Length: 152
Image (cartoon, rainbow, N blue to C red; front, side):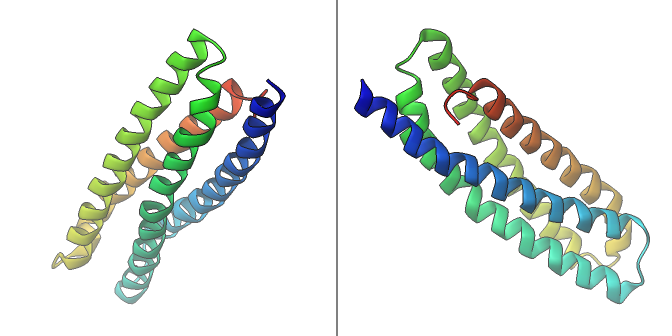
């Protein structure tokens, strides 16, 4: 049992650091939406959309890796502790798949906005969807941190 506990502790430290990194990334994501929502000139909009695209790519790259690490290490170990934790981990895995799909949908929406003849007209919908995704990811991470606090 000590080996299992040490493995959980080792894996959980990395997962917690991933959560902190994702939170900082979401801060930047939301700051970009804030700047876009305050009405920029066309050049400023293009620059901010490029920043947002870079951040969205980073999220699209990092989130699947984080989810895989979390599922293969932490969830695999924690699920064996109790039926309730096994159910929680299964639910978090489902949310991982949903979050990755939302991010991919957002990437498509962002590409469409960038290539639109009038990107400013599409910005409100882009900002709304982006903030919904950010809120969803934050809630997911907060729930994992709370429910797995004894392991993280």
